[in-house]
Image (tube, rainbow, N blue to C red; front, side, top):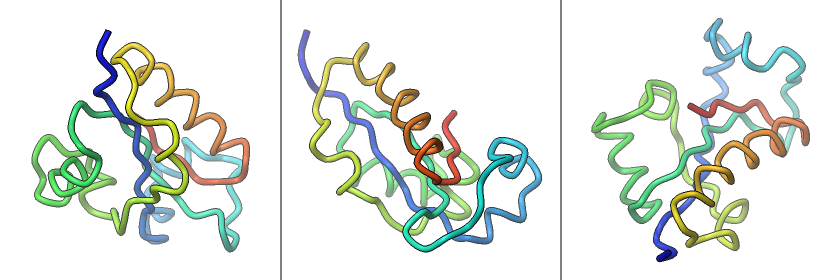
Length: 108
């Protein structure tokens, strides 16, 4: 299998916390410095290209489109690239680990 898929993490504007759906998905989240709200995704594209698509509302997640501020490559860069099946698993695993570390997380 070719390693051409990526996981990525987008920092979200703190205003996403006003969204009831986001709050329900993160009942234990307490805003704090260094633990922002984030969107975790996977793509067959370069993460920068995928972020641009989110912001242009092309196959975008609503939270990533409306609240996305910037990519956080320090969190995911060492993981990429990987085969598709590994990226599918890593997207969920990374979201779980970030939530456990105190981040507010949306992963779809």
